[in-house]
Length: 175
Image 1 (cartoon, helix red, strand yellow):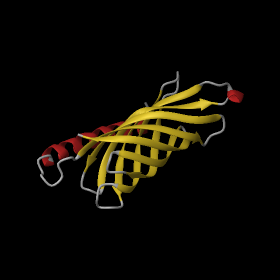
Image 2 (tube, one colour; image 1 turned 90 degrees about the vertical axis):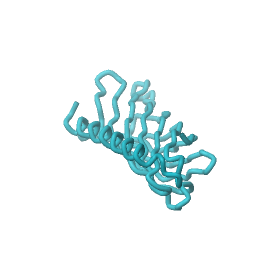
Image 3 (cartoon, one colour; image 1 turned 45 degrees about the vertical axis):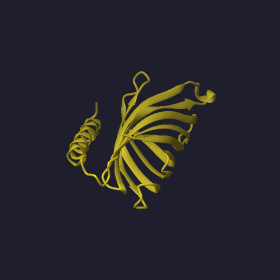
């Protein structure tokens, strides 16, 4: 692995351990008993690089609420970018592992939000290697667990960039 990929993987792991420890220390607070959520999402998008026709993926997102407006999401899944027939067909897949911050613009813990995540994307095709992945998004989460967001997911490796603009539709469960 490249040095920056090892750094990102270590940073994501350290953040996850820190948040898990902080959450364990404050789990007994009666003011906000449901501090953790698990979301299942489907992603559909349009790639930004020539040669690809669409992006399709699924993910799991573990979310720890710091307070009603700020959360720490940890996301992993699988995404495939379909290669156009003119460029040989097939697909390129990767497994993104990301952590970030999610900020709700309302103090209710629902409604409109902004999200920023970063991490590593592990290529599933032979010789694909590992890329830096980042994903800014804006979205809306309803109190019933539904979540819809518009996002960009970018991949960067050895000076080359790729990504897609898409939608994520998800359902979240309180743990």
